Amino acid sequence: MSDVKTSPSTRKLAQEKGIDIDALARDLGRNTIGPEDLAGGQGGKTAPSGDTSYWDVDHAQYGAVTEEPMSRFAKVAARNLAAAQALIPAVTHHDRADVSSIEALRKAWKTDAQARGVKLTALAFHVAALSRCLREFPRFNASLTPDGETLILKDFVHVGIAVDTAHGLMVPVIRNADHKGLWRIAAEIADLAGRAQARKVGPDEMGGASMTITNLGGIGGTAFTPIVNPPELAILGITRTETVTVWQDDTPRPVPMAPLDLSYDHRVINGADAARFLARYAALIAEPRHLLI
Image 1 (tube, rainbow, N blue to C red):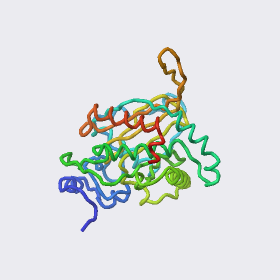
Image 2: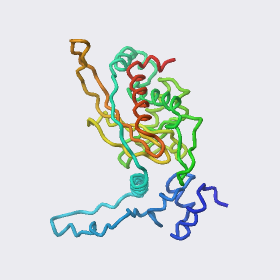
Image 3: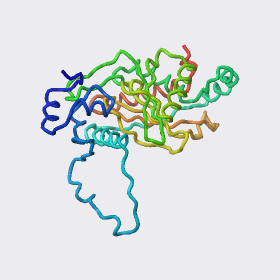
Image 4: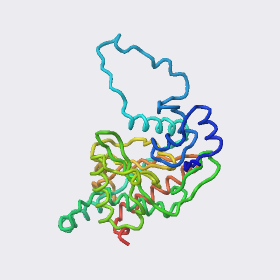
């Protein structure tokens, strides 16, 4: 008997397509398979919906070209992203958070961080704030069953961290982030990111996230629309901190602000929910000492 969890209709569809459910689950590093995972067919080939015949172009007729095969890792990611984009009615809510207090704390604790041998990044504060919000807003810490009929509410908070590596995007997970302090979160971020770059993150350290953070702050940008990573219901994007003029009465004050981009599955989360979630998140980032309680 297979240990892979899937609905009878999905298993039947896999049989009709000649897809080995167990092999597909191993390729994806998961133990659950939904109908959207079958879009690629046997052998992991991405099969976008609709007529794609116009893609079949001899590009060499226009100039010199070279061919670069997609890696197995990239093909699996492409299949998942295409399915997510096609099946999830996603909306992105944008906001920003005052990070001046976070930067002040990081500066004040620099000596302590050196003594601990830990780099206290702003991302550690973001993970702590997100874990708090996921406890306060349980519908964000949930997943839909593949048939879209049942909401699974989770009594754990695991935060995925998207890591840009030379071999593709990897998302290791900080388990039970709501029970960990800033120093431990910072240490785990550094450890997971380093091992992801070296391709030393195990399958048991990926998957099962309540929600993922994808941070482009070190690269640039002012906003983007991250794709929800099913079976998660939302994903938080962060871009480069920018200085914004804030008025206090008649006095302008420069404030460092981190742009926030929250994409969410509109089948479960509505716009008002997203606005409240991100407003609470921004408040925690603006007053990070609350994260130490």
